[in-house]
Length: 269
Image (cartoon, rainbow, N blue to C red; front, side):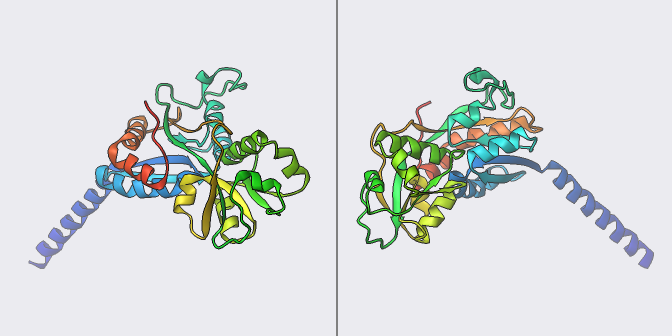
């Protein structure tokens, strides 16, 4: 009897181990490289997607689009890339043309690219600031001693430079040493929240989820290029169908509800 019970116990254990292995084998990991400004939105959407696709594990790498582009070029594995600017996606897309992709790099899986979101720029100040900063133009006055901007490799920094060039202030800000450069938009947000600077430029979606900051002004109309977020499956993906299924989910009602609640807008497709 004891031998029979022992035998049955072994059978049950082996069966459960086999089931666990089968479940593990059926689990698909999708690696998503996404602009830092998408952090809160995609983390919320990932929890929703777990219900929709329980056999899919989403692994995110959030950073500036320029840093993510470089990592992809240097061989980092990713199934999906979502940039905060067309520039970084163009540099990886063979169909973008020689003027936008001079090295003819071919990392994007053709037929999968589309514009997922749009965003807008805002000027933020520390919560409770008494500097009376109410416009982007104030950056060029004595009201501002130090302003945080994304660096030249960061889309939010590139857009901010366009705004200040539009206002005729970019050269002044640089020559007077008023600018402290950050490696991504979250770093700008942090510097302002900690009152390490008088103001900073971020996306409205970051301001909506940030704490310790107040929106002082919207960027003047027409002062910068449209802030579009292109998304695509990458050519070296080992899970093209699962990767595209996730991007298609991001176009759907559940995901777009999260995006718009945070402050993104959805482009016409």
